[in-house]
Image (tube, rainbow, N blue to C red):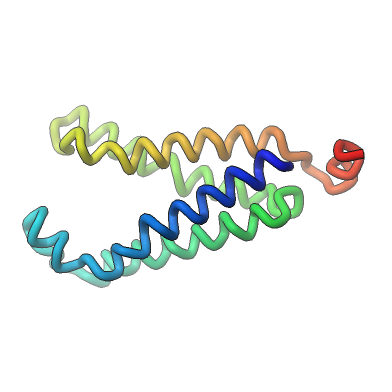
Length: 131
């Protein structure tokens, strides 16, 4: 359980630090990486849903045994982005510098798998393991 607590705390804090600035960067992203964002509702929708998941990570960190089933959803939150970016890179549609974010998600996703496997499925097992 300690491993899961550490992993999900790190993931939640890291995500809040990395994603929160997006809320203030719509214009800059459009200037630095044209074309400009033409559908800000999708941009902000993504940012807020992603931020909400960071809160889920922090909740899981408080009681990994209780919230173990949510770890599966957290893996789904991490792996598709990494896979999609890998495919885009292989097709020549993504610069190598843009692989840092997906690589971080891939690493966190793998740590979520380990946390899921190491976390007991029931509270009684957790109490027995800590005794």
